[in-house]
Image (cartoon, rainbow, N blue to C red; front, side, top):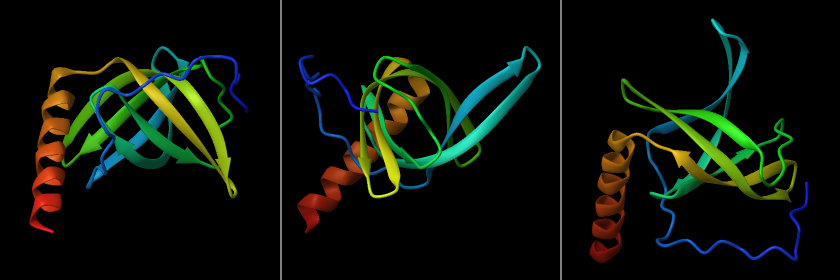
Length: 123
């Protein structure tokens, strides 16, 4: 569960932001035609990756994950690699860097980022 402390931490190029209305599932492929979906909490996201929380997931740094993000009626299939893991209470928190993310997801993150900046300026 612990990451290797001697490994350098990857610095994010931009802050992660809350993602209202975005749902996340980890996809396990049982057979070519059969997938199993396990939903978890999406804590925040940016163009480079996301942070999720799940009590059932036992992933370590370097593990690849197949993900699906859902927003309204759209599905964004993505792939990521776990960059770090930590335990907070009964839940495990994971930082995931995107290996593949569709362009449409980048545009959605742009919208979330603009909304987040606008709401912070308004306060």
